[in-house]
Length: 281
Ligand code: ATR
Image (cartoon, rainbow, N blue to C red):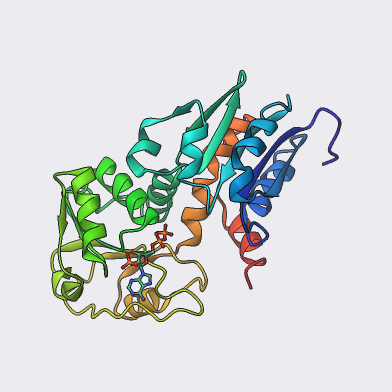
């Protein structure tokens, strides 16, 4: 597609930003749906956040941006409206510029659940227990997604126990916090196990966990996507569990922003996944 003078614009702000896969995802879709538009990486240091974002809203064809580290929490203070799901998660990853106003949301919970549902459409976790490992920003999004999709209980554990307790305090009933040392013994009667920590990522140590108590029909999901198959997913696959890779969450979280900015709901396909992964190898 040629970009004309009428092109619709969007982008992603962060610092650093050069590693972001979002430009690859959105520009793939712009090409696929033959939309006159462009999506660009914007390196915005912390001190320039407010001026930079307000400046972008002065450009009539700039429709909005994704927000990544380190701005996901601080950007909430400079927008006009934060929607309910972003407030619950406590962070924002998508802004829509509309009639001179900045509307903020968070699509990570949707991205996590949409990826699970695309992989396992019969949704066997509904009404059942899930175990979530970690208590950072990603864990908050995963917990919101799982609570809204109807799991009966989330058992949450984190190396730093207090951070898991804070999530329980914020989200209330439905979350049980157990000590980090119980991560293997707590797996009985679990329908879904999710790793939201950075353990297992290239360069980090793997998550040390014994899956012996995990039911054979449980699903194991990781939000890490470098490598695509983490040591946890490999361990789960080798004992026969269904596994869900982290790359799908990244692709699905991009859907809502693209639709809001460019007017087409894009599809997450195997071809897109392969194209995006080429940039990570
Ligand atoms: P994100 O916002 O992407 O979730 P984060 O807020 O830095 O990132 O959270 C990282 C998660 O990985 C946390 O749950 C962290 O545990 P702590 O809260 O105890 O720091 C977890 N994590 C990172 N390195 C870890 C390690 N070596 N062992 C156990 N957990 C680890």
